Structures are given as C-alpha cells and as structure tokens.
Image (cartoon, rainbow, N blue to C red; front, side, top):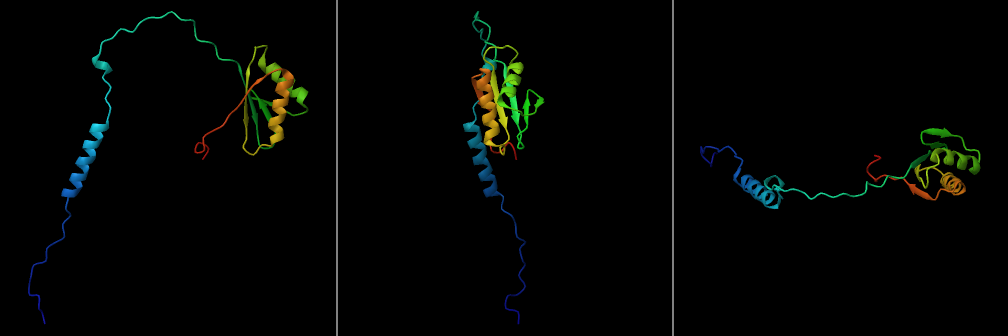
Length: 141
C-alpha cells in the first residue's frame, strides 16, 4: 500500500550562502589587519654620516667533534694525542690573530670529555673566547 503518493523527490542542494558569508568575513578581517608600507609615496633624502668603518669580526676557529671523539679544526682532521698538541693546533689555526673566537660544534652524542679537551687546549693556548654552536629543535629533523 502506497500512502505517500507520487511526490516528486527534490535533489539535495549545497547551500553556498553561509560559505560566502564566512569568506567575506575572513576577507574583511585580512584587509583590516594588513599593514601597508607607504615608503614609495614619500620622497625623502636621508642624512649623511661619516662614521668609522665597521669593526672587523674576530677570527673564528671552528672545532668540530663527532660522536666517536674525532676532531676537525678549520676543516683539517686532527688526531687526538694530548691537550698540548691540540693547543698547538689551535695556536696554528689562530695564525697570530689576537683574541680569536673558538666555535665548538660538538655532536649531540659526543662525550663530555671530548668537549672538555678542546676547552682545556684553548686555555693552554691562551684563547679565552669560546662559544658553542647549536641548532633549533626542528632544524635537524
């Protein structure tokens, strides 16, 4: 028994009106919050200054330490014998430059002793400016 009769079924439709409303609100928000630079509209003449030349960057000595405890000083592989030999190599890498900066780039799994060896060699060589290279958490992945 057919109680509904013969009604025409309507096809379902997607209503785009709410979607358009949301997109217009987002567009208005972006237009209001955007900052525009108007430097092209201004014609300015900047003042001139005679200053001393920029200070030269200090000499950098890059010391790399891998996870097996091998050392690289300014792209030259150095076999560890003792702190004195490493100090001599650091002096050679400094090349007579006053107060170079030693940048220690140690592998995350390198031993603490390997890093301390470089620091001790720098102390023996009279090099007091030491820094460590790091990376952000997402950069290595």
